[in-house]
Length: 500
Image (cartoon, rainbow, N blue to C red; front, side, top):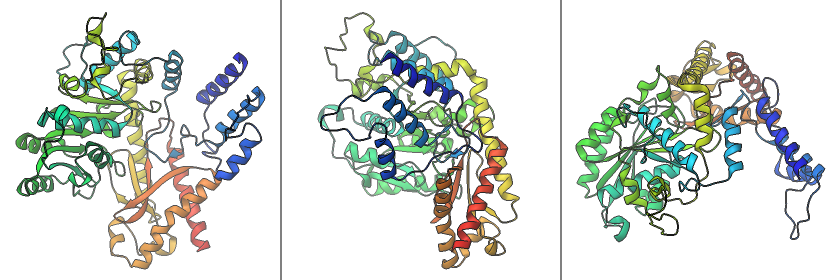
């Protein structure tokens, strides 16, 4: 077994140190049945009713197939999702955490990691302005906790918001009030999922209109809160988004905080994507006002390249966590045991928690604040280069949302239509036939791209029209990669247009 383990570890390390790049394929596309067949020649994907041990050679062949047929998210031309380019230090840090195989619930099971979590959460809290940053001592009670993803963190935050309004909800359940919460129409669907799980219902989520960039229209929020109160409902929380999924738009936190303070509403910041702008001296201003929020979720596995997952939920008043979530299990959280005051497990809904902090701590110590900031600045620089190339493409591409952060949203225009559609503002006035044709192109272009494995670029509807979305966060992306990906879209676009 030791030789098998060493061989797999060596293959994984080789991949981390020398991932695919340039003209290497981003994906070796295969249909589901093809994957079943090819794995059947090594160690089959299915498990038999009585599964016999597989030989080392078969398993190593299967490992090679896993690498070959997985999507290479380290590749500079993978800009398909809002995660990419995992930091190599983070990867090996994750391995070490897995090898030690403990839980972060108690100090006695994870003494180093308990202190490490407190140190990292304290630093994140200082970046968000949740304290004055006057001390770097490791707190016994840090300003938050690590969560299994941004959606779960939003669920926790909304339960905290409801608990602040009605502390009896923990023991007595819902008071029967018709609670409402507010999020922009471009906000994450975690709001509606959380409302369903909390039992307040998806109808309690009021989606507020956005401006042309995708940011919440603040006067519309004020009007929505007022209308909800007039309808006999009880507004209790607002979710402001810092970095929307499609356009990476940032809501005006200061103005939203004014409304929340006036109306006594919990302000939660969804900074899952854009929260990492706080690492950059140039772009931290996009989150001006975050210190006025009550909670703030931050996915470090997105822009910062931590391996999935690494999510911090910051809470301005962390004393509320135990009051809201504690189960007081006396077999685990004994108040009279050694160092009990450091136990974090009774401040969250979870019990056992994987160690997500080690990879972040190692990476942060390795790169420092300057290195983390550079990762953000480089990402915006690549997005700015893409925006410049799109604007100067003489109608080959047209921007649909200008943007000022890492997401670039645009359409490819067939050559025959470039005299008609010169910029994104003209698209809305075109004939239904032309819009239908343009809408169909991104999916067909991407299918060609996937079939040849040359790149992976996302698309999604923007105002009802499918558009390409480039998301820049991988520090390995160069201007040559940007130019190559735009050229690929044009090449495949011409190909599918001729086929039509």
